Image 1 (spheres, rainbow, N blue to C red):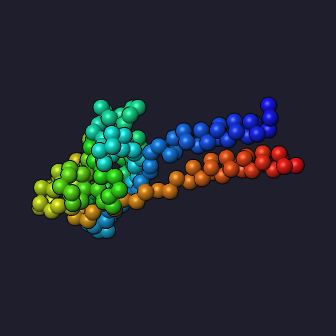
Image 2: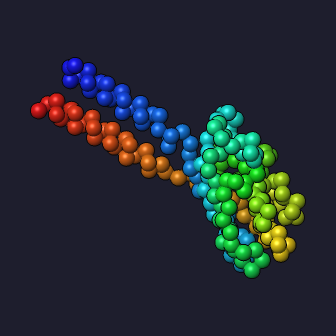
Length: 190
């Protein structure tokens, strides 16, 4: 096998691994929301992909889980206050999620679409978006956190801000591929 043919096969294999890398398929985002009583905040992250190209990442409970789910990871942390203590929940506690891809907010209802997050694990609940807006005196941007054991609720009318997370796992893969190609090219010249 000639060196040129070997290099072409190696290049195709490395680029194939890079293109098929799962870190490129879905994107991870962070989100945050303030404005709750006593300065409490919500922070979290989600990983998803708009598989049906409708412009939204959508998740509604068990029927959305597994292969082909648009939302593959979710975590939310409430810092807590005197009304509702701090907690962290995950994908298994999420029953509804709709986010317009590329929007800076979740649940802002700017497009008139049903955007928001619904979490309920039987002990606490977190809702944001136009659906639960009636819970917050009809405000378009609305969020509430409820502790079922005490019946206490804390609310915010601040929007949930969303930021994409850079995909650092892809950079070492690309650097490694280019390094291998450079090494093979240098070896060929020598």
